[in-house]
Image 1 (cartoon, each protein chain N blue to C red):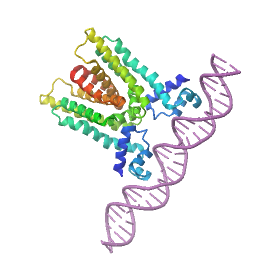
Image 2 (tube, helix red, strand yellow):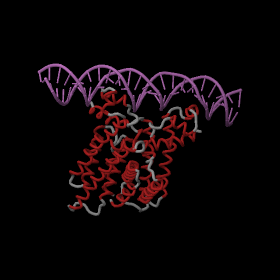
Image 3 (cartoon, rainbow over the protein chains, first blue to last red):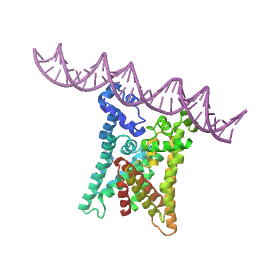
Image 4 (cartoon, helix red, strand yellow):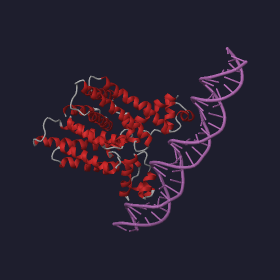
Length: 184
Length: 184
DNA sequence: TTGACAAAACAGGACAACCGGTCTGTTTAT
DNA sequence: ATAAACAGACCGGTTGTCCTGTTTTGTCAA
């Protein structure tokens, strides 16, 4: 039951946003009653926090952190993620946007607890990339690059490109940005 | 009257978002009645379209397009905008986010007309930057850069950095990204 | 294994507040 | 005199929270 609600909320929050997803819609989609929903998540905010902590964090880990950590280098990892996401969006034919950025945009100014949870995920993401750059430097694969700044640029570029791709419903901008990063 | 409503809606939509800004709140803040509001904007969506077409477009023009067009080069213009925005956010001590990206995130999947209006602003923004790069190339100030890709990267990086700055309530990431763009 | 009991999970109704849109009447501007 | 602008009431529907009652699950002792 709890998992059904989380599954449904994760999808709805990404596709429509938090405010535009009513508890009624989520209950109907998950096939649960008000009593059951409120037993597991006493308030709508509690549900959002659970989605952020359990689902959004996991999505960033799977889409970004794990591939970068496992890649031959940070640059190779970033390139691979951009390409994988662009290919996946092309195949889907629809761009729902980045789960983290979709919620971060909507909720960062709305609630400090939600903002803190979202900020924590951004921070972990950036630290993972910066950590990989440092490992690259120690092993001679990279030099002259500031790890924190590289990480900030990678996360910002991806976040912005996903926003643009969502508005344009076209994943080409991801490839354009990757090419421009390679050139610059 | 009409202008008061637009003023108030522009601020509320940026600060809280469209769905979390009720017409009641906007009316109270603008000091107008329901009759007056609906005379000028028959539906909430019409109000959002007006804010996008008249206020968001103007903000992107003032913050980005005009300075880049007037700069010595596209790269100099991009640098100057990042720095100016970072400085302004530091002075404000608060990050509300980019008016275009805030609404684009919330509304792109919610309504095709709103998405089209937002996409149009992104497109004009990118074209202005790409056009400046082309002018630079013709006058020998730039070479070997793909104008469209450079523009995509500049817009994406700024958009992503503003999202991150809003979540962190800290403008440092704008400077980090600018420095990383300079290095890369 | 069974029965008793408690806790957890679930169903679904009630509630006040809120929402955007519709509409009639009044005021203001031309 | 007429059109535009404005006031504010009304409406049905929606919303998240709160709550009581019922069902299911877990635990324990006999």
